[in-house]
Length: 299
Ligand code: NAP
Image (cartoon, rainbow, N blue to C red):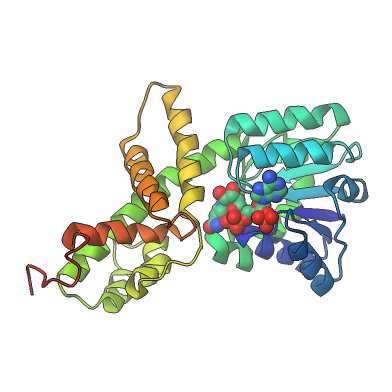
């Protein structure tokens, strides 16, 4: 099977390397072409100049780009060149409606579409330990097995097109609540004068621990928030969750609160930092701006 990969960002770089390790990767494409050319030279695969040129030479294409319009643009361009029977596997996080639109765009060409959003962060992408949530036909899911198993460890078919994105939206709501909680607890610990590295080492093994606490708590200890998972991308996901909940007339409190906090971070120029940058706002609960450096109440 010859697989093309589209979107060599923080996630796509690791995922495409894992497809290469599995002997599946035949071509890569990225909007900023240098990234694709550099990776292709390193791995010895092709880097066609356009999506239309990549399409006819592959049996499947994995896409991992930023947001809804990006997926639709990529799929529309691919549709011009894909052969009947080719599979498009979209690992971006977008709305369930976008997944259904993408599937409809590809249908006339006899191309199957699977929505396959992933969870597990950049580390999971590099180590091929991603959780992959799949929506689409059982036949397409069966066909995609070697590709999905090369990139992830837990691969689950949830139902028809859009179901993978619905599962991912569920995950993003949990991530919002957890990162907020971790940031708030770490700001509290700091205000108590606790050594934050020991807090992460010890509480990381306790009942209140989580992936975010163990993997992103250290960012809060260092005060550095390299992406990781960018604030503006999680804000995009929470916008999707908000729209999906609104169809039931529901506004989810965790989603609304984190959208507010992310809007604040973006307005201060932190949109491209990892979501652990939420700690910046939580620290200010104890040390408001302008008073930084003032003795804490407990000091
Ligand atoms: P990223 O580092 O910002 O990379 C985005 C990629 O999409 C880049 O390769 C970019 O190309 C490409 N792109 C954006 N718009 C495009 C367009 N209109 N046409 C073609 N290519 C386009 O993002 P990421 O962190 O890899 O995330 C990718 C997807 O995975 C997102 O949907 C995100 O929500 C999801 N995700 C991320 C994480 C995480 O921890 N980072 C975890 C799970 C899921 P350029 O290089 O030219 O900019």
